[in-house]
Length: 84
Image (cartoon, rainbow, N blue to C red):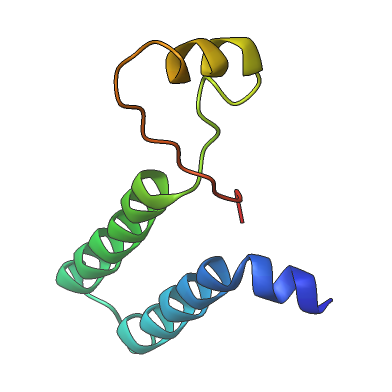
């Protein structure tokens, strides 16, 4: 359970933030500016997730191409990261 919370903490925080804002904005007869503000917040959270989420690079599964790039005589920047 702790791994689920730890690995997806940003997702959980965003979900809590969206739920809190939805509760505050939409609790008493919401008008169209309230819906617009909520929609913009939701769109911003989705765009942020799509831009910042970890993705696998094309060379991650091809060790031979990585070895060729390292030994090719030009500087190579290697980044080691975990998807979570």
